[in-house]
Length: 473
Image 1: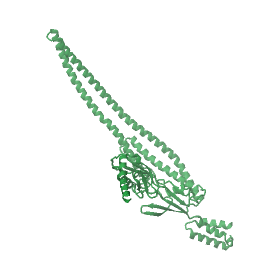
Image 2: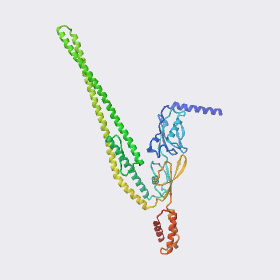
Image 3: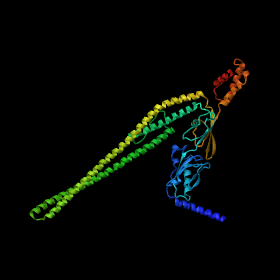
Image 4: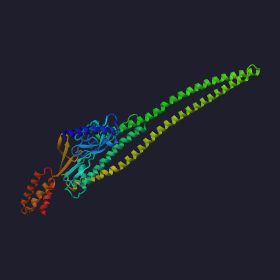
């Protein structure tokens, strides 16, 4: 029985790769870079530093093998299940490493020189817990901060509590202003690039904008993108003109050659014409038969026809020169039209954003003042639990800390327990509630000192007023 099982396992190990080899087209190719690693607009960090983990959704493309390509999700074991290759462990791998591992799996008896490209279509979600109104998991958004994550979770507050809306509105207003300012900066860079194209400049220089730091990372990124676009478009435009301009000398050389040929044919025609005159005189004198004269006349007609044909060839070549000039003008006009259209659109959008940005800033300031005056919800701590290849780490964060895929954001309130406790104690001690006696002053001082010990940094005047009102009740 054991021998039979070993024989069956050996037959399966031989038959499955052989069957796959007959069903699939073996396409040799050259390994390529993972798509996700070349797309910084979708990567939470630099592409080389991002590591895959459970929950990441990947798009895997096997060149010329659509039946092996598709979307896959990294499971809890860090694996993706691929057709024929089975489970591939990609957990804690970078995109390039995961691509290489998939290529090695398909190269192991399934494909010859497989070419695999992968990218992350959706990063694993973040989790917001603790002192938020809507705890749960939320989709990761590139560039989002802890403040944005708390806003998405309904803002700081007890779970299920109806939002007071002022804090969330303030955050949303701030994010709105930030988005408008980012769009404005991008449009300014695009407008400068389009103006350089319109003026047919050879280089694109970012303008000196008031209030912007030339070393700002966002500004450098926008300048890099627009510079790359400028160089590619200008190069394509110049290449089109160069191709058309290179055809003109060739056509002119053909015209010169045909012109020389016409001159030679005309010389030949003159010779034949003089010969005909001589033959005509001899025929009249009866010294030459008339058929010989007729042969010369036929030859003259053939030469005249050749001259006419060559003149038609020159006309055709000159027409080609004219069409070439028209094409060059069309390329220039289309290029200028596209640049001017995009420039007009960018300028109009810039005007709209400038008109909206002032109002958005006023709304942001008003909502920020309302949130600061209406409640003291800023008194909480934020702890981020993050999984890295080396293990799980815990970070003390603030509202501006950037989040990463898979982060667990825990918000802890430190506000009401520490403030309300002294007030409750004062209300439960009626012997201290004489507002005019010396004991009241000592009780207020003791309570205020206790609050100072428990809550460093809380405004003493506000607490004193709070205590006095509670005692008058």
